[in-house]
Image (cartoon, rainbow, N blue to C red; front, side):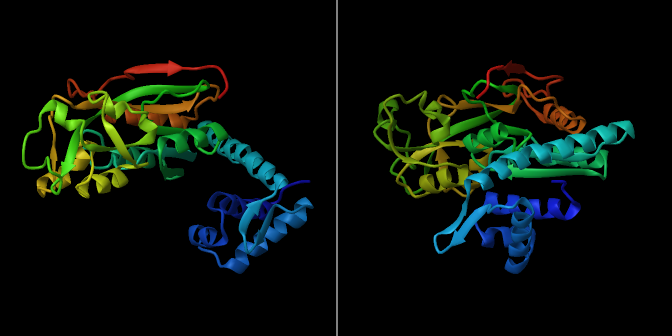
Length: 315
């Protein structure tokens, strides 16, 4: 079958349904009524000749064919974006859509301005479209692997084969306790720290505990805000980026423990698939990221990437 513009519109609605997992989420994301969403879904199913999902009291579930259509649509979206980039190059213009993923709570880092990166890319052309997803690193990696994202900005991890990562920035983390915690009003002995309950981020794979190998982990948080909430409860201690914790430190609601002796430097990397060529827009975005990146030890802006690690095997 040949796809018409109306088919592509219906496919866009179906993709939103697959990604949000419900009609309510799709309605909010697209600004459509439920009847309009249902109309596009029915229209696409009629054109394809099979059901894409099952909907009922148990919720919205993709059929096997529906999952195949959704996965195949990712390549279609990427191809359209790449073609837009080719046309833009022929006209000496920067066009297309860039799908970027990023971890949460980097915006308070005075040593790295992500908004400035967005500003420079948008100023380069009025035809540029940037879609930004903020979530946990493991989710972002999965989305890159599946073709849902072009690149991601995350703390450096032990990534699988099939990806390239470029170190461009380093973030400083310290160990914190909240004002309700017993350690808040005094300096603890080194051995005393490990007797307290820690909160950690699972994706960090215990890198936060390099100074406290015998630490008692009692809570897990998949983002910075959740980790800060555990610390502010007064029941846990844990690591946070210093720029992010500054707000509560200034309010005397948190304090750093044994810093800078137990400070952790977290390298940040730009992750892409190693077997996929980059678009002009993606190259510009990476260039601006590198220009904004700061090396923790000398505070200078790097002229080029600090390091690139590439893998050639599939994930």
